[in-house]
Amino acid sequence: PEVITVQELANRMAERGADVIKSLMRMGVMATINQTIDADTAELVVAEFGHRMRRVSESDVEVGLKGDQDIDEDLIARAPVVTVMGHVDHGKTSLLDALRSTDVASREAGGITQHIGAYQVQLGSGGKITFIDTPGHAAFTEMRARGANVTDVVVLVVAADDGIMPQTIEAIHHAKAAQVPIIVAINKCDLPDANPDRVRQELLQHELVVEEMGGDVLAVEVSAKTRQGLDKIEEAILLQAEILELRANPNRAAEGVVIEAKLERGRGSVATVLVQRGTLRVGDIFVAGAEWGRVRALVNDRGASTDTAGPAEPIEVLGLNGTPMAGDEFAVVETEARAREITEFRQRKKREAVAAAGSRGTLEQMFTRI
Ligand code: GTP
Ligand code: MG
Image 1 (cartoon, rainbow, N blue to C red):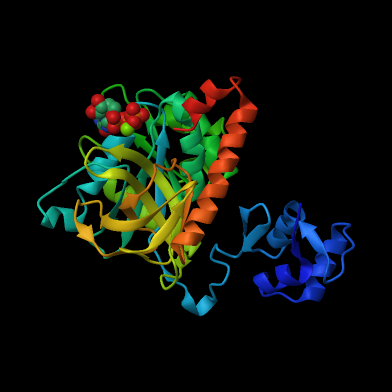
Image 2: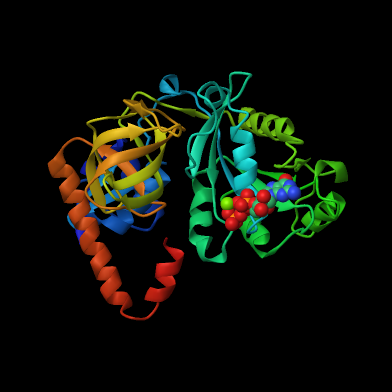
């Protein structure tokens, strides 16, 4: 169905009508300023102008919810978001725990208090790094694919006694598809049968050429157990982050992505989200995938309540009316009515998709969309 006039689309993107018509012409669509176009066409135009579009109902699209209105002066430096990937049992979580214990703040607070899938480490140097953990099990492919998309840098953990394995290769593919730089952590170097040279050799076969071999991939020998090389990993991440010049506007309605979500007894639906732009506040009304809610409480990675969460901060959000899925986008909206409108539309679409899939493929969906 036709959803929007060329004029309205131009207005919502804050672009000139003539430029939108030109863009349409390049796609072979001849339209006048007052003509209406369908959502698919509108989406192509929106993408060409570098904006983003959401289909909020069958008869309406929304343009520009995603960050496009940010002007350069509003952007300030933010922490890098690092996803840790690798084969099952190669030591991702151990490495994260070890890195986390270098965290100045949590050491002050008396050590590690809890374990969630995402947290921020404050380095002695004053810098911050946000880490996201991913499971190595084969059933979690989808989550790793999504993890690669929310991240600035991938730390690929390879056990030095085991070498490159199927989920290592899969993680390399995800990182490459998302065009995210890879830092290799050759882990378990404390083990007697550790063979970091073999790991570097095997990486070659997957077009990851480490610096020692004349390439540009940083590979650091580490041990989550003895803490060898932890400082070098942090250094490598900060170096990459500097090159990427990561910035975001903290002074806008929050947007980001759901890292994990579950229903917890006594707490309701709880989502761990990564704020990507803006600042999330207690009281905000927000949409997460096909669910919505009003932020009742925000709990940080140290288990402390807080009133706000800014760019690159992982935070637990309470107050959802349902449980969204890992990888769902979230965005703060103006009103409850708006939140209902968006989520009702999405839930209907979801039901339709499930009905269309029938019995076929539903098992697979269950396993890949955790
Ligand atoms: P999944 O999340 O299940 O994919 O595993 P993981 O990659 O998070 O591995 P995890 O950190 O759970 O570690 C797996 C096993 O390896 C545990 O028994 C750890 O104690 C051990 N391990 C992790 N890092 C090291 C290390 O540097 N040296 C030694 N010797 N053992 C390690
Ligand atoms: Mg783990």
